[in-house]
Amino acid sequence: DDDDDEEEEEEEDTTLQNSDVTTKYQEAAKIVQAVLQHLTSMCTPGSTVLDMCAAGDQMVEQRCGAIFTKKGKKNKPMDKGVAFPTCVSVNECVCHCSPLRSSEPMVLAAGDVVKMDVGCHIDGYLALAAHTAVVREAPAAEGEEEKAEPPAPVTGRLADVLAATHIGAEVAAKLIRAGNTNYQVTEAVRRVADAHNVRCVTGTSMHQVKRYVIDGSKQIILRDDVEQKVDECTFETYEVYVVDVAMSTGEGRPRELETKATVFKRAVDKSYKLKMKASRGLLSEVNSKFAALPFTLRALEDEQRARMGVTECVRHELLQPYPVLYERTGEFVAHFKFTVLLLPSGTTKVTGLPLPDFVSSEAQVDEATQAILNTSSKKKKKKNKKRRNAEGEAKGAEDGGDAGEAAA
Image (cartoon, rainbow, N blue to C red; front, side, top):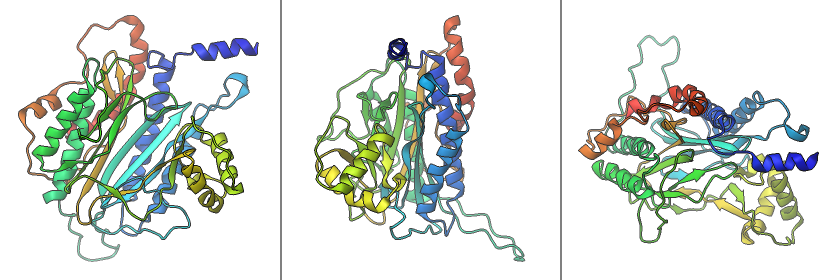
């Protein structure tokens, strides 16, 4: 009987051709959207980065706990939860900032530019998103006679980089459709950056995602540098991609400073006999809880032991760090990330929030970019009956996912 189960599992269709799989991607996406909206509401003076990261991860776990509660094959509960730890990176910090409880508190102040990154998976099917918000002045305290002025619009270079990054992500989402290639996307996003006189951040790339695979082999680089080349690839129906765009008013060549990485991923193809007890304990816990997807040391039972053991694990390449990267002080950085599903009806954007309406950039995109933004993501085609099921399921997520398109 067990053998039959295993055969069934092997034959399970893990692509969007399976409407159950499409549903899992969409449910993960709904959770990511809700968490990102909640984190955006926490972007107020006095909030701490640690509280925001902890709140994001906790909300993902709670929401996941409430759905797909029926046990599956072999009476095992479905695996679901954080697919990428919540990161909150402020001002010139570009990405991967997810502080530990033991680190110095980072407190938000009015004017801070806050980049939030969230990921959730259901049964290994993952949805990711990132959003950039600006901390507005604290509202006037109750009882104050004068009515507080509405916060001033965001203009100038900060508005340019926010608009360029969001429009760049929208353009990428429109171009990731069956038959197009990765280099078409790279080129189109570069044109948006040029129009706003900002730079794409080097080292950022968008990936195809699959079940339990956050960085699939099909890849789109954001910046076509000499040191970073990828093979040309063509997008196909039933694939899933994460649109990931970061731009800067500076050079866009971020570097590591003294902030230590806290987010890691198990390198599944590597093994080594570790010497330290703390390292062995850490690896054993990672293998049982986070075998495939990234995690934060904060999620481990003993944070102090994890900090001691992580160095040996990284040195022998058992764990791959996600470094905390910084642009030069005084520059503005924005980051937006969407998840898109390539269904037979066209590309459906299932995560990503719209650009806030107080962002006012004077830069104009060129005609070619505007033409891409004006295209519909849907194919105008008679539908094949068999395909209607998967697409019908997609409709619910689209209504939320396409909301961002109007903003650009």
